[in-house]
Length: 472
Image 1 (tube, one colour):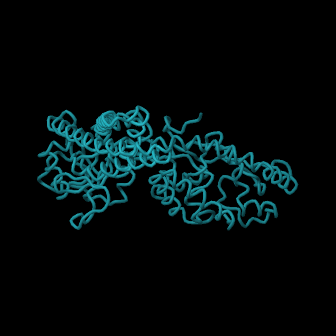
Image 2 (tube, one colour):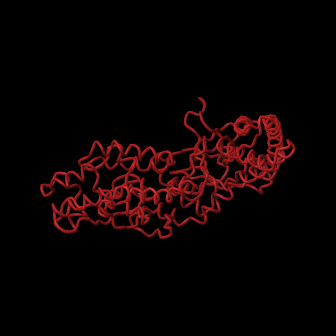
Image 3 (tube, one colour):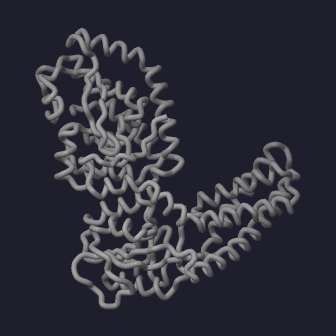
């Protein structure tokens, strides 16, 4: 099966920071394993406590395993195994109680549904024992981890982005309280040193952050802002996230309170940035689903494909398929297939002319298949070949990618993932002669916030978008 991981990052289309990030695969895995050590310990302790509770409450082996598995899934969904700096059982109790209670209710409901009402009391006892054992296990585990951190055994190498007053305060707290597991290596900021009371040296500028992370083997980045403009931080921070770093941000106006999941170092709140979802299990499943849905669509739409091919052949002669070079994941070129709506003068025209929406050479068939997006259907073969996904940033021609990469902020970052037959920018009306800057923002939003549910929403939004038609 075709994979999407990039090992050859030599494409000149990608910016330097992006080219560096795609060759960090092994280092990224090592970083993530180190950062996930605490979560792995908690998973082991929780599982042991859950199985012990199931055994003592006289559950049968299958029922005990089912209750334990449900509880672990519920705790995982509640964020009980994410990377955290502050380890306190009291902070965990709402997650533990809700997750374990949810698993217990599910098991009790199943017992009632299959007519084993007598098992409900056993499930209730098992749930109470699970809460007790998991809470005790986490208390002991946290104490051991805090001790290991204070001895420097479990410390994560850390850099603070921003050497102003907030960064200096945060750095002093990190240095004086090793129980957070942060080994402060230094600061990154632009211009001269802003604070005279830094707890570690100034390593370089904020724009050099990706290079500093690689050079000093950094695991965690704490963003305390500083003198660099926020737009200048996006590319290096994306590269650091792709390299396996965990990133925490000191929120603006944090003195007024912060909503959502918050960690902290002493009195400084820290909001974790979302880790790249392109390494998640769900992302790997995306490729399998692409192949299945694209194959099914080709079978169901085969009559339409045949009729379209005949209509194109009758209107404009031989050669019903139009082949064009496009840029895909990692800046790699591939041949994209479409039904031909008109015959270009030469290859240069097809590669460099922006739009043919108003071209007089286009006949009625060409106009219909372009307006209804039927001309895009052969791209399902690109999906089967592993060159595209069903959902992703729309691919562009090499000439325009090179131009836009020079003039549009973060345009090249669209190529972090495979391009798609449909995409978020496309269903929001950004096709044809529309804003490239806005397209890039939508595409990068899609990548940074990807989820299976977002893909499903885009596929559903594609239906009315196709019915409305387009002129691009």
